[in-house]
Amino acid sequence: MELSQMSEFMGLSVLLGLLALMATAAVARGWLRAEERSGRPACQKANGFPPDKSSGSKKQKQYQRTRKEKPQQHNFTHRLLAAALKSHSGNISCMDFSSNGKYLATCADDRTIRIWSTKDFLQREHRSMRANVELDHATLVRFSPDCRAFIVWLANGDTLRVFKMAKREDGGYTFTATPEDFPKKHKAPVIDVGIANTGKFIMTASSDTTVLIWSLKGQVLSTINTNQMNNTHAAVSPCGRFVASCGFTPDVKVWEVCFGKKGEFQEVVRAFELKGHSAAVRSFAFSNDSRRMASVSKDGTWKLWDTDVEYKQQQDPYLLRTGRFEEAAGAAPCRLALSPDAQVLALASGSSIHLYNTRRGEKEECFERVHGECITDLSFDITGHFLASCGDRAVRLFHNTPGHRAIVEEMQGHLKRASTDSTRQRLQQKLTQAQETLKSLGALKK
Image 1 (cartoon, rainbow, N blue to C red):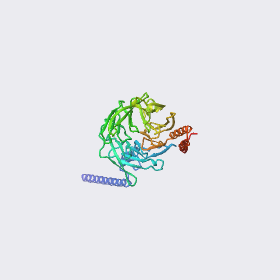
Image 2 (image 1 turned 45 degrees about the vertical axis):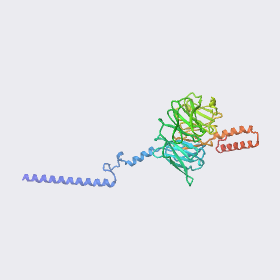
Image 3 (image 1 turned 30 degrees about the vertical axis):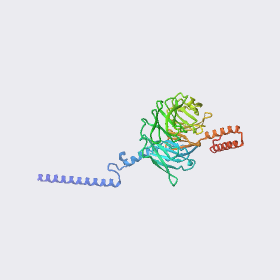
Image 4 (image 1 turned 60 degrees about the vertical axis):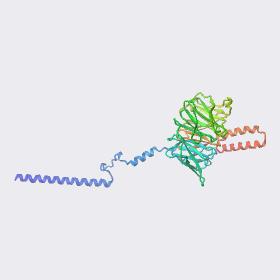
């Protein structure tokens, strides 16, 4: 009897245990469904405890990274700022005004070249035409003398590419790259390119001591060894006769590229040197008529030179003016531009620009933190009315007030010596025009 009672008791215990397990499972299923309906993960407590940070979606993380990495557009305002050209999505490295004064070309690391109309500079909207650089981007750009083409230096291809410009019926242009690029000849990064205004040759200079003279068809005509330890800047003179370079040495070296009467290349000969600095020359520039040059050195000075000399008769350039520019002694990149009439010198250090009157050697204007990054190029337009700079994704154009003041001083001096009424009338007209421009800009000195 006792054994039967024990068996019944054990069976009842097992049954009760099974019922308890089934009830627990049912409650658990209901709790999970409630969690799913509420939208909370099962691991999250119902008291609103924040979820694990690692549960965020990949798309959200990518979006956050994109927002952080996108650079902010640098804002700059100044009473003499004429315009800001903003179409590039990458940093602009170089720009060039066409010889007819109608266009400004800019290149950036967004794989495009932009062609701007100069007549829109003072308008509210600034139109530009775009040329794409396939699978590469341009670091340097120069217009051809006839303004029907431009050349670029390719960052990854390490070579020159020519783009031809064809005008459409609607007034716009199409840009077509020539089938073949120039052959690769440089062994170091190229820092400057130029085209002679005569259309007879192209110049490329690399950061070692090499300057190459090319035919327009891509044949190397001559190789120049500058013997300057390294090149920091090189340029073709506006007259198309000379090429010049500066570097580690305290001078600027100038060569003449000689052609025969029938246009055939003959030779490259040393013309003259600009000697007088006591440290490396950082940059230089020619005036529009190639009769003046300006240089800036790590010795903290700038110099203006008269280069209208008979170098074949052993005549050396004349030093006209020396000014101080202490910023050139620093480590920040330094750029120089000379106005077409050589009356104004623009010097850039880092992201700031300083304007000097070359006749008196005085600083007249200073624009600070013009760009979000260091200035990469600086140039006056062919009229001398505007100074352009680039260093981030925008080109900024300034009114050249020192240039207008220089015209006022020059015309007042000429008026005192004028001998005829017609001459006085012509001089007075130029004087009045410059004074009215300065007055409209709030820059007329009384």
